[in-house]
Image 1 (cartoon, rainbow, N blue to C red):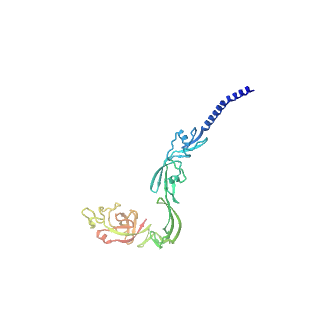
Image 2: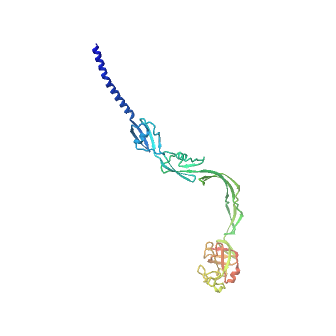
Image 3: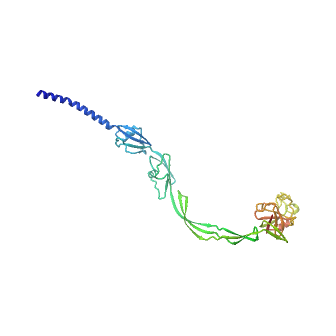
Length: 355
């Protein structure tokens, strides 16, 4: 019995190293299994799976060949321990320009909104101020964040309200004549306007209220419709009448007694003193008879050249000449000599345009 007992003890002792070896191997395998892990690394918008034995975030980034800069964005602290299935997010910083209050800045940031960029620069926004892009919008490389200072104030302005003209036909009055029956008066309105300024410049006007401080009064005028002219027992048709300022001139030749200077320039017609009018007819004074009408210089924009005319007090005429000083409702009446033309002076006449 004693022999058997000793043998059993010897056999049991032989098993101890084997059990120890197996246990140690299992512990090593367990440790290796625990140390090896898969980590998800999201870097600049791309996700990669990293199989790592690193025990902290810095090690994982080093294995991925990433060197974290001062302004880069990292979701975890570099010395934070890693674990299986961990998600690590990294974004490299990029330059962002900022324009604010007449100044320009450049700073580096990653995954930042426009508002966060301004916070880094300690730029405050007023209640109405805005930014482009908006404060909650992410900025990207090369973006420019612009601060727009917005202010509003009220102002008043007076606006003239134009009157309209009410036309009435007068069948007795000659066509071309008109008469104001009631004078028009412009109205006046006072507007209160809200002015919006962005960076000191007006960008919007909004009407708040309006007040009429003077009512407008429309103008009433009569316009002639008569086209029949009766003179010396004769009735003639005319298209319109023009009230003109009339002067007189001579043909500018030596025969008319017109002064001519040493350069050959006459007082009445200047260098155009060859006795021929602008329409090519001879500059011979008429009598006012229909067969021998007066010649007058006109502004062709008012009275077309070649027009037949009837001048009250002077008879028939033809628009056959022009003059440098004859503009608008002015005419120049050709007379036979310079002395008579000089005495004519300046007169107000009525000129009827004949068909």
